[in-house]
Image (cartoon, rainbow, N blue to C red):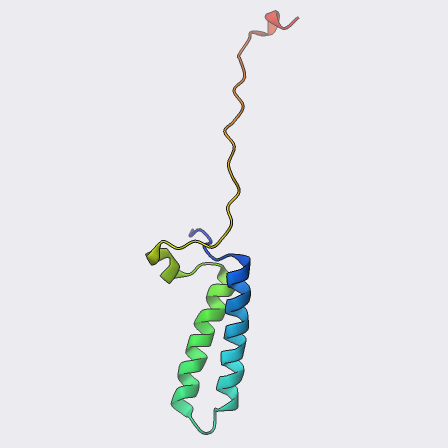
Amino acid sequence: MTTKNIGSVDTAVRTVLGIFLMVGAAAIADSQPFLTLGAGVVATIILTTAIAGVCPFYTVLGIDTHPRQLVQPPIAFKHQPAHQLR
């Protein structure tokens, strides 16, 4: 399983851009069929990465915009036998 590397702002930008490209592709469908196909494919890829939260291009470049929670080290307890706790 891959780790998510797209944050919320990046997801929002990708969603808006993908929808814009899809609507633009639908608007020019009759006059420019090859441009429509290209815009539709790009929009599909952008929307898919936004929904999945994983961008293969980001993985190759080592970019990560997904916020991570800091992992705190576990608290070390002194192990004592039960008879010493009374």
